[in-house]
Amino acid sequence: DAGVIQSPRHEVTEMGQEVTLRCKPISGHDYLFWYRQTMMRGLELLIYFNNNVPIDDSGMPEDRFSAKMPNASFSTLKIQPSEPRDSAVYFCASTPSTPSWGTQYFGPGTRLTVL
Amino acid sequence: AQTVTQSQPEMSVQEAETVTLSCTYDTSESDYYLFWYKQPPSRQMILVIRQEAYKQQNATENRFSVNFQKAAKSFSLKISDSQLGDAAMYFCAYRIQGGSEKLVFGKGTKLTVNP
Image 1 (tube, each protein chain N blue to C red):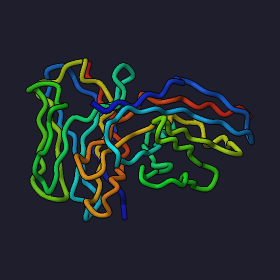
Image 2 (cartoon, each protein chain N blue to C red):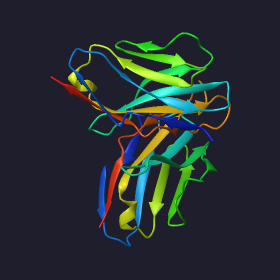
Image 3 (spheres, one colour):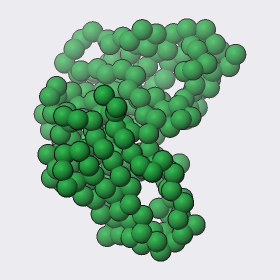
Image 4 (cartoon, chains in turn yellow, brown):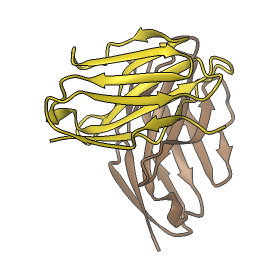
């Protein structure tokens, strides 16, 4: 299997621009997670989906952030408008519901820089 | 709320020596899973080892083993015969069995391996 795929790997944008991060989970995995990693806050869960349905978005920092999962093989995390404090590494991870021990498989991450 | 604490922000070890990374967690649950993830400079999050709380026996994976003390809520990672490629950030994580699929991560320990 190719593993979790994320694109782009690096994104540099200017404040106020819209940013879209993309994720393809491992085939057959029915849970998908979006995380943000910064030096100050560590690894934070933003939102996760089960069978394409958002289950918990309590970690989404504010309305500028939105996430969608239109089908089992694709998810997006959008920031509009972006701000410098959004600069971070964004990870996507997936896990199957069975077996149930919940090992999450991470993508390589997208390093976002907002100028 | 469940919390995971890694009290050692940084550790170092000589190549071929053994090092132990500490992790404690706080939970009122009896069934859960614990994980150690490794994040090398490439920033890819890689599962190192997993422990089911109901299992008495400590998990091992080649040079990696854990010391799971359920009553003390302690889950340390031992790396034997350390190699240069072991240099990375190591994250301890916790997940309730049968509940949310969310992982709760510690802040991480940066391991340096000296030649």
